[in-house]
Image (cartoon, rainbow, N blue to C red; front, side, top):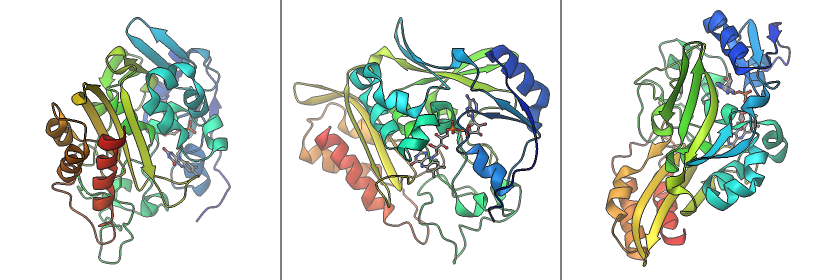
Length: 329
Ligand SMILES: Cc1cc2nc3c(=O)[nH]c(=O)nc-3n(C[C@H](O)[C@H](O)[C@H](O)COP(=O)(O)OP(=O)(O)OC[C@H]3O[C@@H](n4cnc5c(N)ncnc54)[C@H](O)[C@@H]3O)c2cc1C
């Protein structure tokens, strides 16, 4: 399938967010923002997706960097995953995000791959990426959800014609930290909770986020509420590097006198969006942080899971990751 030969496109290199959103709103569906290009160039080389106008964000200085704000930290969308992983500020205050960034792909990809690109990357379903006419690509079949379909990597919840999962490792960490996503368009700026930023096929089968054509993610804001909390991140994949999660887990909790007083937890690669584990949060809040609570949390996490033919293993995997998050954080 891979032809390694991209179709030609017009390349625009704006030097401000204002110019970038002007261009993107002018091009609408026929415009494509590119940051590190790790997801984008796959699509273009395979000729499975295409836009005739590509807006390169890498010359926009205001989109880069990690800065302290009055009530937390703001990370520009063009900040690389390596910069996040190595930032003292992120390691000290929001370690779960540094840990998640460190588990993405490979060092080479993290050196140029950006947080904006990581949370906006497209689904990794084999069939969809291969360019077949599945539901997500505008067709009328889900090839992964057939008796012969290869669906080991696919979802336990939220299937609605499509069974692909959210592939981002940083997304569950952002949900656990209650991050705010800053979105700009030619109409102005809006802020959306990370939990509401990602959308499933029941909302729109052709998109993974609330971003409309012409909109740009400019920054991610981490609120002070969770700074310095007790964190946990773990990812299980077939290989230890350069591989997407089979399941990952991110947790932020405040433990006082051995009791969990506040907690947010999210899992990746089990649903088309990072799955906030509100049931687990309810079960463990006010309980002692011990083995028994951890076991109850694990059991609660997998209630209602609906496996496909080949992904039953994700249920005990998620249960154990949740257990470990409570016990070992
Ligand atoms: C071999 C390989 C292995 C990988 N393994 C992992 C992994 O283990 N875990 C993981 O999480 N990811 C993994 N990835 C995905 C990779 O981390 C992401 O593709 C990368 O982080 C995307 O960043 P980018 O800047 O290169 O994105 P780009 O390709 O530039 O952009 C990706 C998408 O996001 C959009 N976009 C980018 N920036 C913005 C913005 N500011 N506003 C709006 N839209 C934007 C683009 O339009 C595009 O649709 C892997 C990728 C590859 C190729």
